[in-house]
Length: 359
Image 1 (cartoon, one colour):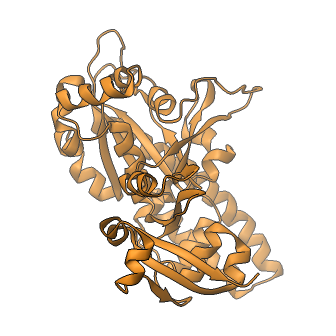
Image 2 (cartoon, rainbow, N blue to C red; image 1 turned 180 degrees about the vertical axis):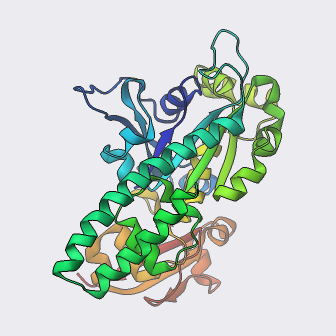
């Protein structure tokens, strides 16, 4: 399961968006320390909806994203370092306030998304700088006992990281090699995680949701810090959540929205991490499975079960667009479109796969 942690200043709407995404409303007990509320969101996918309508299975299982939100109103970056849900997060979602509401005063008096994004980014950088410095101190001692090539490579990478952090640059901006990225991932640094800025828009600015970053003056800074953005209006999403599905659909149509902002947030988080979905279909279940892009078929089988990965023989593959167009797997087979692929086949987003494997 993909995991994302929400960050943001007070009154940004962060916790409201978390609750709307996950339907989790009960605050975690903090026991005097920083802890997180955790909930799961389903990744919207019309392809899975169409496959479910075709096969009429007993069960429909979408891909999911796990979101974490700091309990008890805490959320400064220094406290996040010790919270498991944030250390283990694959990405961070920074909810930044762009809505105007005199009844909800901003902690810094004025509405300024660029200032707020910079402020939180600086917090993440400072938190990581402390962690890097502590690790380098330990490394210096370890190298005296064991000057191994791995420890020296780690030291060189962390020195490079410290230089970037001291210059006010997040670790995600370093442009690391694949090996260095894997090495750095083990430290779970906050500023190394992919960042999605969720711009919480004013209701009057909803028409700008598709270009929210540009609308609030964030485009250049987001390019500088290597972050993506998506626009949402928590006030409207709260109203939509209180309607039955038919009324919600009509309300969204009236607003000119093709899909809810929350669906776009979930989808954007999924895409930010470079993930995609393949499907398994049948009378028992239609299911979307999350895998990184450019995953081999045998590795994709492991998303279902390690036994299938170990016993992999062949993958029966047809893209969901072809399957939906033909109307059945039998028709795809008759037209020669249901292919047999080997373990090194690179799975495509939307592939429908049946894995043949030894038991």
